[in-house]
Image (cartoon, rainbow, N blue to C red; front, side, top):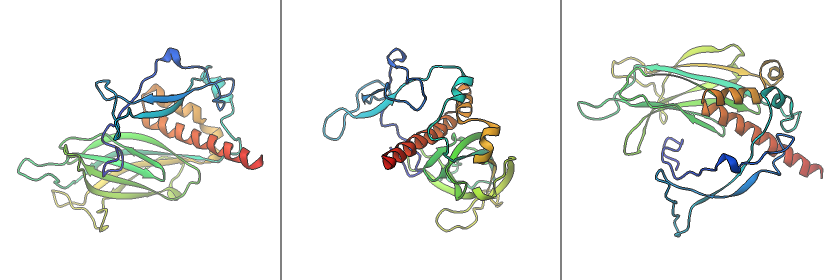
Length: 263
């Protein structure tokens, strides 16, 4: 369920599917005709079925399949339209300092986490509990059809009641990114008034970010989308895997739309 942070802090439900029931997608990665597609009932953490507003079971329709082959073979298979252009943005949220006190009371502190927003992408870091100088060192990958626009990084203070307060935000301009990772310290500004945020120690609140971009023309020379996704799977970097899946799905959708127009 989408909270004020825009990331989704409350779990509505989940489903599982035994691996033995998953079928192979076919000879081509973008061929999903053999995939299992059906409605799955969502359950809570105790595996109880989630009941919807009108008394019925809450369901999610999904299509699931696996691809068989080595990493080298998978990299050589077509991934949607060959003329599809996209770039990959690598952004690493490193650390912050001089944060303000957000919780009331003598024992009040700040429990910061960051939300990265770029068009349809929205990813968050973990929460650092009671830390005025948090260190995340979390790296994410964003797919961009056109390397332009702004990446907005908003820092929130986590509250157990679900009403997380925005501490401040900063903007990373995609057009200024280079292929070599560049590290920069960004001043945090209030979301509504765009004024500088002053920390508990009366210093400017700051966020340290490292970012780079792999442009479309450089993709073939660096890494394939599949290689990046498999590396993310190997190290349990779910954000990277989701970003690659999102980009691949968009590529397949664009290919399908193009075929319909040509027909």
